[in-house]
Image 1 (cartoon, rainbow, N blue to C red):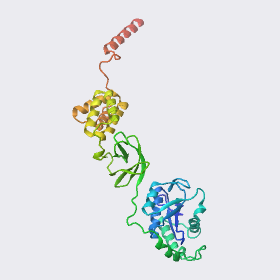
Image 2 (cartoon, rainbow, N blue to C red):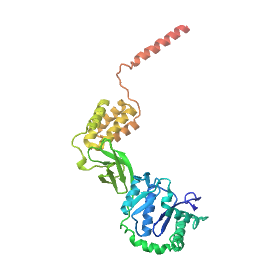
Image 3 (cartoon, one colour):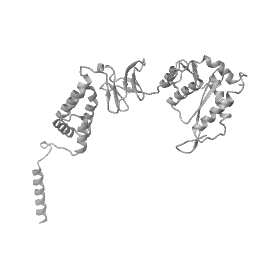
Length: 358
């Protein structure tokens, strides 16, 4: 039980245990919450503490590590798989509901729960981890193991030379997801847009991103399609070789829809595409969406104002409509009668009512 800083209440922590198969040397780490990145970071921290990495890791089928459990062909979490690959480790998930396949680490979990942590309360996670590390060094490593009948520290000294050396640089953690390529040939990542090679419009791709880069991957072969530098929200990043000299058929249809909606709407959308090419596709879609929201007549008037002022942008049209919400009606329409007809009708009815009262 550890006191959480935000709530001020005691909470149960999660215990992560990694145990080497030969020496039974363990690394035990405490966390409040688990996630795919936390699970991968715990593995990396444990390998760093051991000073080397094994070639195989046997693990449970928990969601943070295994997306689809299968004894012969499991689907690993991409981030976890890449972290292990960075350290030269292969993951071998157990059979489903068969924890005895990794009994050495299961006994290590029970050992920590019953011996150093039973009945303990700590004021912070750092205090609890320091207590557990001290116990690991002073007691767990110096004990005579019940199965091997030898001291754990002595056996670990024999095992350590056979561990793989650690890479110099730590793993660069990233977020990942799936995106569908839009009409402009780009995918959206945190409100910025990144281009792909021609031929991917309408198809799904895998995306990895961190604070510096965005990587676009083939969903089947995981081949790197493009790698871009991170952009600020609203910006685009497209390689010059990915820009097509020919207007795509989908874009032609979109411009045709805009022209049918209204003459000034079509002219503005043509100007946006002429000035911004693929990056203007989303803004053209925005103009068409405004016509559905505010009405064709109002948007056509706003586009006419934008063309007159030379401000050929979706943002101007949107703000114009927000600041001029009044409905614009046509002065000449067969469905709208002249005001004089309503005046004559009112006068006629008024005279009839007077005659009846007289």
